[in-house]
Length: 221
Image (tube, rainbow, N blue to C red; front, side, top):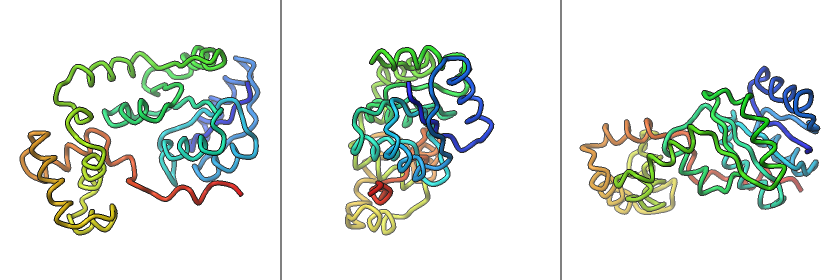
């Protein structure tokens, strides 16, 4: 397969590239360390698979996936990240990413199996991801079951420390609506007070994903 590797840590990028090319006999056709660079590169090369880190210096990996799939819907994505919090698991499921490896579970060892699965049109998710997903499914109080999409966006901004006026400006809603969402979130999650809500947002990964960031400008012309 023709592979593009998107990873901002050079040593990790080189290790993945070496494994793909020398150990697994795939063709590495491009590398990038930033999201905008990756979008332009993938748009030009049209690889079979993009191996993608979630945390990039200029944007999160989900924004890269969303933008690329609009211009190259046949592209398959394998995400590799150190983040395995609830919100990351939730976003992986919703985004349609074809594979997921967490760096804490010897990702290079599992990389061959993941690439083989993607080459056959299948998906591959690490055991740790499956365990985290099962835990969320069996938790009646998990955020994805009790919060609306808008409430999840508000929660991510609460986690960044924004007040109701700032949240309203970011999301294009009124401060009163923002305050109502905050109150509903507190009640639904059974969290007492904004400081604890901020801690919840951080611990569950909501602050890693920017809300409604304008990534469409990176689409190559």
